[in-house]
Image 1 (cartoon, rainbow, N blue to C red):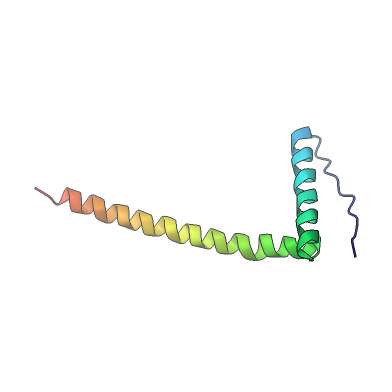
Image 2 (cartoon, rainbow, N blue to C red; image 1 turned 30 degrees about the vertical axis):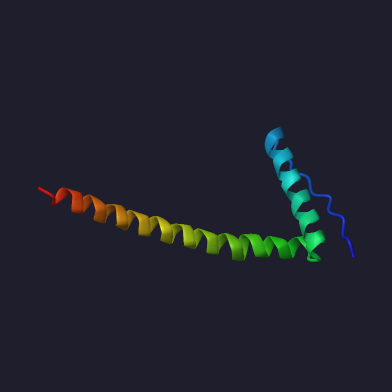
Length: 79
């Protein structure tokens, strides 16, 4: 079953409205091709995938910062 959405952005800023409308249409098409609803794809992207991705990126930033600090400390201790 295909449900038609008539969402349209109305921020008054044309490029934002166009971008929003394009992204909504893209999500609707992607959801339809995957056999899920627009709401389900929103939950997957914004409640599951995005938070996991953010956590992984934060962990990687912390890991690299600690590695850089260790390298800098080793360089400062050399005569």
